Length: 425
Ligand code: FES
Ligand SMILES: [Fe+2]
Image (cartoon, rainbow, N blue to C red; front, side, top):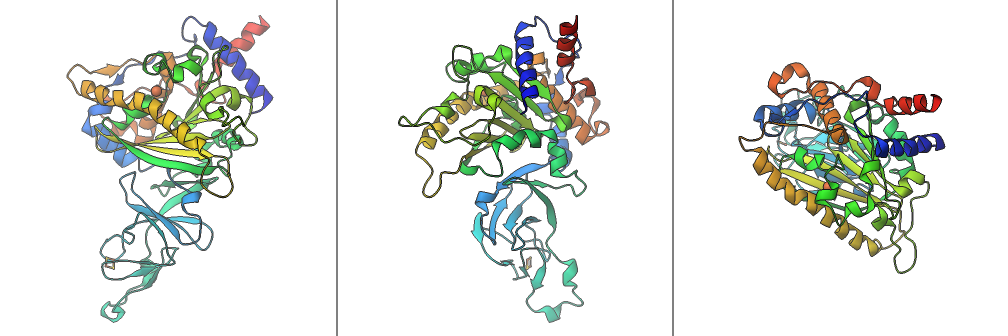
């Protein structure tokens, strides 16, 4: 982040702390229809349109280090596998044999040069090309070139591997837009996979995710953890194209930022840092939500990415990826265990309440969600979801109105215009 962006953010933090109402130009947010969390019709639209047409984090190069390394992946309800091909690329294929649809891969991970279907032994290479079949003479005119495994779009940001089931989707770099530039200092191309685990949750996936898209809940749900290091009144939300968003919240003047647990020295020595992380990354919680299901508070000594996945309408999965600076040979440094335990305690504060929210939202008493200006990234997400799904496909009573206009989407920011006008007056 350059000096100008940092200065703008510092001014915006004071603007947010000083305001006594939402910014004058900020639209009033209509209630989100409650059925967006509970109605099977909306869940079906998410499945058919949203999950099918978004870039989704499916893997990391550290899981697929050598040619032939593969990984089965089914978080989005479509069994696929990723393979590090001899070409050097990561390829993604539907795990569906071109013969009678059996899986070609049945192990979670492994390494091999060719993939042989267990059912009748058709063999594919790492480009998905059909190489050989048993009893070929029994097939009349089987054209191998038409019987490759079906590819899934697969592109990388650094070592992160994303997939998209939509053949016509915009490229990943375009989907990320300027966020890819803001990510640069956190070095997704260099940080190492430290830990990766998945939690089962008893709530709709959006209930779980939205707890990580606002800081309004922090004083209530995290009074002794996150709240201690996060000045929520100075939080600055920003909206990006495609439904992405960012929050930047400083620590209290009297205390280090919420990310301080990551910077705590180990045995008297400072933790290694990711070279290049800027001032905001060092002093604030700098967190991104990438549409549709990613939240990542990034920091200088390492960071985590949360991915939220539906598991039916009232259950979900929370996938936690930890990344840190390279530690050279041997096992990861011992301090990571404490760091991960700490985060898990914070996540438990959010996720345990999610099950309660689910039950209450299923009641006749739940009609809709009035969102505050502080929670507007959630509205922006829903607005982008409808744009992607296609408003005409959504029953009118489940739609949201696109009230947050382009004037609020980065790089536009009416708050900065207001500050400039104030300074000029
Ligand atoms: S289904 Fe794969 S070889 Fe028959
Ligand atoms: Fe939380």
